[in-house]
Image 1 (cartoon, one colour):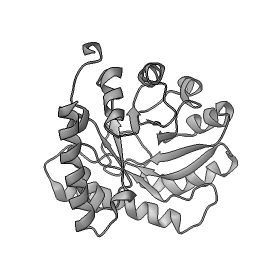
Image 2: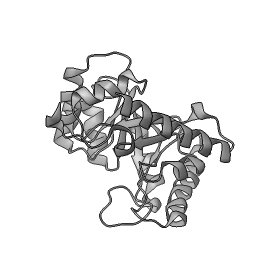
Image 3: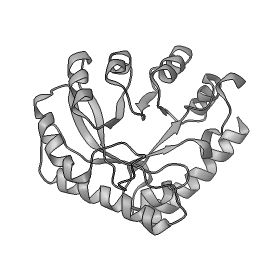
Image 4: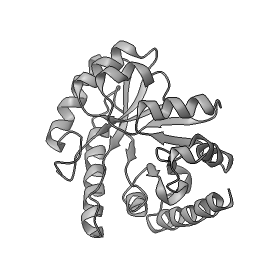
Length: 231
């Protein structure tokens, strides 16, 4: 627990510094603890030190964690790609979906969700073949097509930067996503307010915050790499 508290303290200091550099308020940034590689016990400890937003990338992972952590004040974020046939298993158990990027998923959400779901549309800004997401030029048309889906609210966009030491390349990816977000927000679409940005992970979250991230997904730097079987 002390290690977690120390890690969180360091992260908070980095976040505050990034907010100060970019003239932003700390409360405008949500830290999502990515608990996909740690046990339910570790995830519970993360909650106990005050991080109430947890991220998982597999349906099995989120369902297992929720079974062991039955708390109403936790926000559950699904941050991985979800297969169409798995949407029904998680859609009423999560607060945010960070990986909407194809119409087949949208149709399943519309069919299976009992209430409106807050979604981030995933964009492959970097153009890397290994990454999922819409191409930037496909984004507006995709979001306009979601008008007919009343179970989906597009609150923002999500992307992942290349894993590189080139900070300017990372920054350019995050800045591009922010510009895409700004363009969409200016269109004032009721179903897509598009005010949020989910970007930045353990190795680049400070750059993401400087470029406007509202949600950063921090795994290793916060929770460590304990395996699920360790406790």
